[in-house]
Image 1: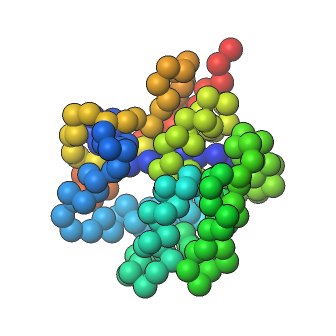
Image 2: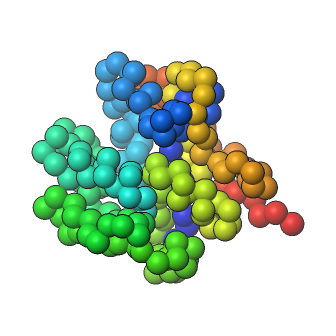
Image 3: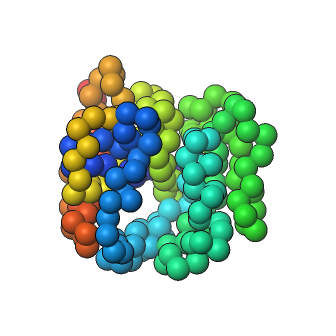
Length: 192
C-alpha cells in the first residue's frame, strides 16, 4: 500500500501560495538547484504516482511534458509517473506525448484511498493546496516534505488546513541544498 506524501515549496515564513493563490517565490532564485534536483531524482525512485488538482495540473502540463523541460534531470522520472488529476470539470488530462492522466471526478477521499491501495510505492501531491486540505482533514496524508526557500513573503496560504485539528508532525530528516533550500521531512503522528 502506498503512502501519500505532500511535498511543497514554502517561503521561510511558511507560505505555499501568495494572496492570489500563486507561488512565485521560486522565480526569485538565481542560478540552478542542481543539488536539490539530484536529491529529488533519487527520491522519485520511491514514488509511483502523482496526484494533482486541476489548477496545478494546468500549470504542470505547460512545462513538464514539453521540450522546455528537456534540460531538467527530473523530467523523465516525473513524466514517467502515473498521474491522477482531481477535477469535476475536466473531461481529459493529456500529458504531451505521454499517456494521459487519469481524471478523478468522484469523491476525492474514496479516490485517494483506492490509489493508495493500488500502489506499491509512494504517491506524491504537489501544489494543489485545496486538495491537500481535503486529504489532511480526512487523515489520508502520511508524510510531508517541505522545501523551505530563503524568501519571506509576509502573507498568503500555508500547506496545512486552517480551522482543523493541528497535524502532529514528527521530524524524520533535514537536508540543505544549493540556493539556500532546506527540505524538512515529517511523518504525521496519529492522534489518540
